[in-house]
Image (cartoon, rainbow, N blue to C red; front, side, top):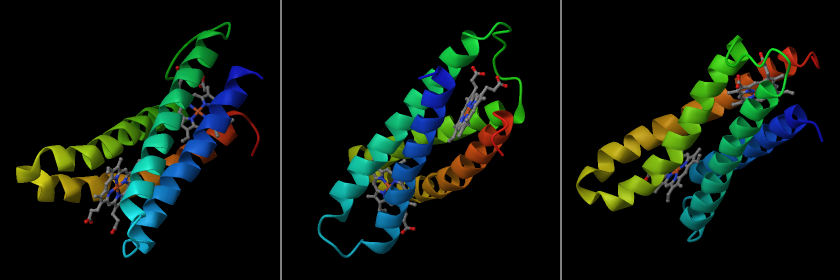
Length: 133
Ligand code: HEM
Ligand code: HEM
């Protein structure tokens, strides 16, 4: 499979996972299992988005021009992937630094929502760059 297709597939799947993490946090908080599931799918989604970024860099590097970060999709992509690293990191960190848990939790919530806004826009821009839509 070409690297660009692997990139797109990893990003789309990663987005479905982080969206599910948000939905679980918003709707299943009364269930005893919510945090375990939220943590697992959040970490999986973040990892898939990171792998998708590695695939994108490799895909671009293998083109004749090999020029990185040259379009709005790629700039928004960097922002999205950064958010996908920061969000689960803050999710874990709130348990490591109890003194700052309230602040970290607030920022975690913000980044979790931001990620779920940026990722679908990045996907749409990616589909346009690839001339699929
Ligand atoms: C990319 C992955 C993740 C996303 C998108 C995400 C998103 C969110 C969102 C949107 C909320 C707030 C829900 C609301 O509005 O009530 C939330 C809450 C929470 N998340 Fe995550 N999260 C992720 C990963 C993690 C991880 C890895 C942990 C670690 C255990 C974690 C722990 C928590 C906790 C404890 C809360 C509850 C905070 C509260 O009491 O409001 N999250 N998450
Ligand atoms: C969450 C979703 C996505 C993110 C975060 C993302 C991120 C990125 C990043 C960071 C790059 C830059 C790689 C580099 O310059 O070295 C890139 C390139 C690219 N992505 Fe995505 N991507 C996403 C979804 C998609 C989708 C769904 C497609 C559709 C097939 C796609 C197609 C492309 C293409 C064609 C390039 C090369 C663009 C160019 O060289 O100007 N991406 N992406």
